[in-house]
Image (tube, rainbow, N blue to C red):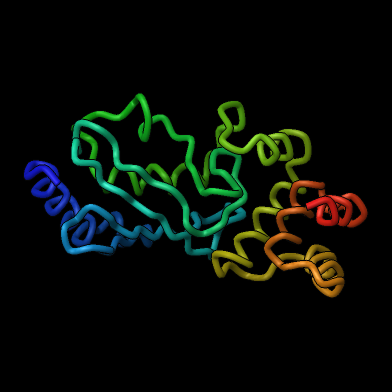
Length: 200
């Protein structure tokens, strides 16, 4: 990796570790490899959101052209959010694409991602199914996001109605992650979710 990128990311890594703001917001970052090309981030679900109480892991890859190009970031922890792919964890956020500026830092990226969890942009979605649910049925979206936050991010347990439906389909022999994805994309209708699972 280019020397400028290494020096810069080392400095930013230390900045995140020492920052009161990131510590107060429960944001962490760790090294995956010794040469600073890959980092592991963790952000806490913001208060008063369906993600509250959850912890969400991020894969952060630093390109050789950093800081002139943004880091490549994706969610490792599965999450139900209009701007994050429920399948791959890819993120739709302008500063990770065309609105990136070399003055931005790792701390900016992590704080912006945490802010995105609190303020979705359904009109610029990464996941159309989630965005559609967010706009058409906000209550179901909130319950679904809470449930994903519980199963994948360790957030508190959501309502029993959703967990009963998951248990019903896993008892039929379907794999739990597949069941959660099918129910979530089919508005928690057991019948259509079962048809989807059988068709895969």
